[in-house]
Image (cartoon, rainbow, N blue to C red; front, side):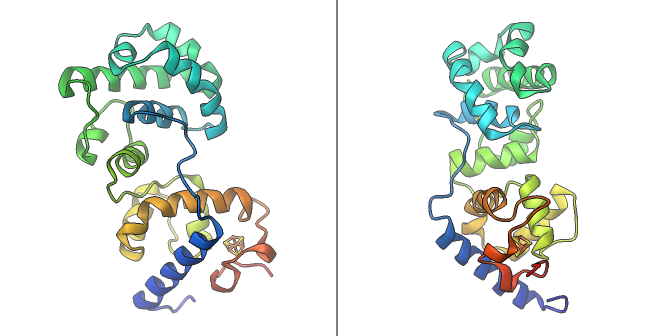
Amino acid sequence: MMTESQTQVKERAREVVSRLKLEYPDSACSLTYSTSHELLVATILSAQCTDARVNQTTPGLFEKYKTPHEFAYADLAALSQDIHSCGYHNQKARSIIGASLRIVEDYQGNIPDSLTELVSLPGVGRKTANCVLGECFGKPAMVIDTHMVRIMNLLGFTTSRKPDQIERELMKIFDRPDWVVLTHMIIDHGRAVCIARRPQCGNCVLADICPSAAL
Ligand code: SF4
């Protein structure tokens, strides 16, 4: 597979997507939210934290702060305490308040729907922005999280560890309609089979097309 042409790489990418769709037909975002602003907040909280932990925190959080306006004018110390269990709570609280303030003051409380505008919000990087674009606005967007970095390297679709570079490379390989679901399926695969430090290659549907398979 080291000498694959770009056409062969794309064919293998399509095969990966096809097999993962069969394996994980219900793959979806695992963060719980009901509005685009709630997803923005949940995604900020998910940095260096598990989605399960975030989902334990957000029901009470969204009950206390119901609108972007309430987050924007929240007390920093109180919000930090409310999200303490997600880690990096002071930094995340500043990001949530800063982003919410811009959304309220510059966008009338509505989440902007472009990558450029989203990444201009305090504390919002490409990962958060792409998550919101894909989930809430149905735009082709690829979220490069730790599972994507690790498994895309194992699958030989990149040799980079830099999320921005990986995103650019994968966009040339995978078909646009698959970008959003690809991340969700890879996360599911990383949790169920291609587990960090102990990949279950013997049980992997990608084993015969994965250059890292240890069979
Ligand atoms: S074959 Fe092994 S290394 Fe490759 S994707 Fe499957 S579990 Fe991961």
